[in-house]
Length: 352
Image: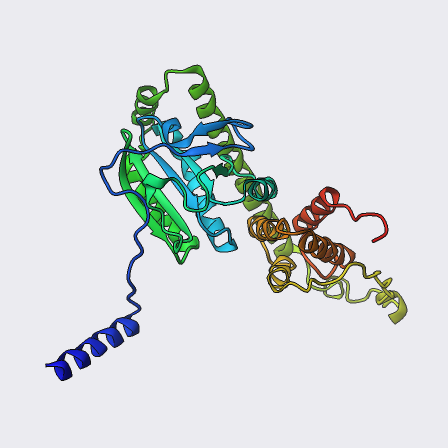
C-alpha cells in the first residue's frame, strides 16, 4: 500500500509545484465575528497625538483595517491603493486605517515619522499598541506581509493574508472594497442622491469627508497637469527640427571648438552606500525615466530603511549627496528635490 500512496503523493506535490500552487496563509478574524478593539496611536492625521480604538472609529459603515507585518518596498503599492480607495469611496461612508505592528514603540514611532513624511498619504499610517502579534482577538499571522480585514456593521466581512505584495494586488483590493461599500454611480443625479443619503451626521465626520475629497481632487489635478505637460512636450519635440542645417543649408558653419565647447567637470561629492538594500534603491532612484510617483515610492523605501540606524542614515545622506553632485547623470528634477529634502532633515554632524 505504501508503495502506491507515496508515489501518488510525490506526483501530486510535483504537479502543484509546476503549476505554482501554494498553500494559502490564514490571517485575521473569521467572517461574521465581531470587530474587536484595536488599540492604536496616531502620530499624524485627525487623531494626531492620541491613543484610540481604530476598529471603533470605523463605526457601523464599511471599513478596513490593514496590518503591516513587514515594512518593505513591495507593500507600498497596496498602501497607496487603499489610501486612494479610501479617499474615493469616502462619499459612500468607507473608512480605513493602516497600522504598523511592532514590539518597540519608540523605534516604530521614529520609523513612522520618516515613512509618513515620505509617502504623504491622505490617511497616514498609525501604530498598533498590541505588539508584534497585533490584537489578540485578530489571530494575525506573521508569515504574511500584510493582513487586510474588511468590515461592515461592526462585523468582519473578509480577512485576507497578502504575501507576494505589489501593484498586482490593487485591482483585487478595489473589488473587495466595492463589495462592502458599493460602486460609485456614473449618473450624476444618482450620484448626488447617494451622496446626500450617505452624508455623516457629525460635523467632524463631514469635515473629514471634505478633506478626503479635496485630497483626491488635488491628486487628480496634479496627474492631469503632468499628463498635459507631457503631451505638450511631445508636440514641441515633434515640431522642432532635428538639425538646424536642414532649415538653413547655406548657413556659415561654426568652428568645431564653438560647436563642442568643453563642459566643466562636475565635482563629485558623497559616496555610494555599502548597505545592499540602499545600493538597490540607489539604482532605482537615479533612473532618468522615473515618474514622480515612482521616485516617491523608492524614496519611501530609502527613508524607511535609513531610519533603522544612525549608520544607515549616514549612508543614505552620502548617497543623496552623490546624486546631487551628478545631477546631469543621476535622477530627475523631482528626485533631486527629494534628495535635498532628506539632506535638510538629516544634516551631517560636525567633524564628519
